[in-house]
Length: 160
Image 1: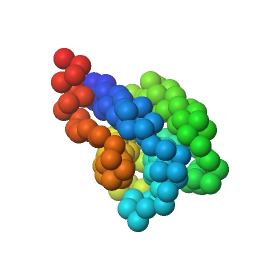
Image 2: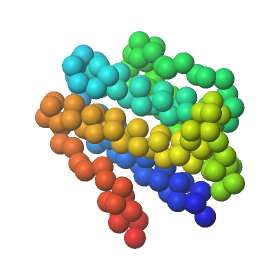
Image 3: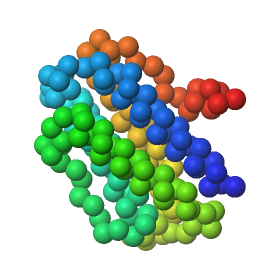
Image 4: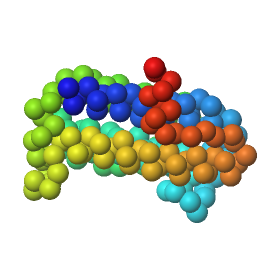
């Protein structure tokens, strides 16, 4: 039952990531996409690469993969490569989520010395994404791009 709630929460995570990409990032020029800023983790590109990198690393840990180093934005020179990679990361995450069960959620997360469990880690990843999306939306707004609220409740209400 709880795993269904977490899957729904990830539906929100994936939907909002795609909405930002499709309605906001797509409006940037290539120069704006790559321009270094003092906010967030660098350029819009760097922010997006960081977001997909963290999702990939946490979910790799979830299935027992050795730690995956953060993706280097320099290896993602354009939006097509980033979008393709982000789609692959999302697909990996969806496949993992499909096979999880409620029993796993209460088990300690490996390497945390019992400080947190798998369920907490799964909530953390979406929370981390929300933080970085807020940064990203601010960056996009500074370029004159019309942004939108990313609240979970709006996602939930849209599905009623």
